[in-house]
Image 1 (tube, rainbow, N blue to C red):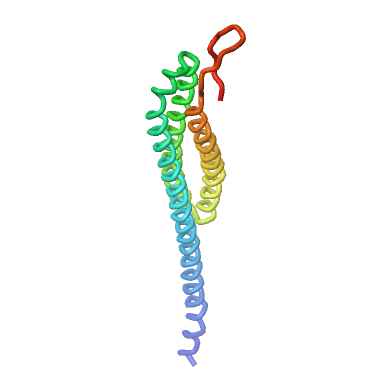
Image 2 (image 1 turned 60 degrees about the vertical axis):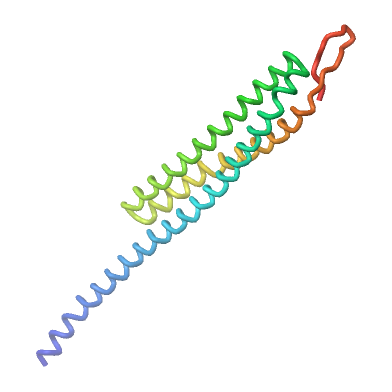
Length: 170
């Protein structure tokens, strides 16, 4: 009967070992799950920012081609509009760079948080989404507005006021 006694005493130790292994595996699976979500989110941000960068680059090139003729035709008021539009295009380009940096920092923050646990990693990822997603959406909206402004810039034409002054009409 003695061998059975050893067996009975080893069962709780065995069960404890299995349960610990399962919990460790579950925690690891949780961290891996957060890493998969982070990777998916980063890929989404990268695609969106690549699209915004391409749109912004195309706008800058188009604006650069039409700027000399439009400002020459309109004069000082066209130059002021062109300068403002150039600043907005430069700002959009910088915003893409800033958002790329934030996305990289988010990944580092999530990994740091995961070192303390899957729940902390998930919380860090959710926080990153709450910070970055609205900014990406706002930049997308800004780029859409810039598309319309660049389109309209090419339609600027000089007009004569009643006092024979030159103004700008769209």
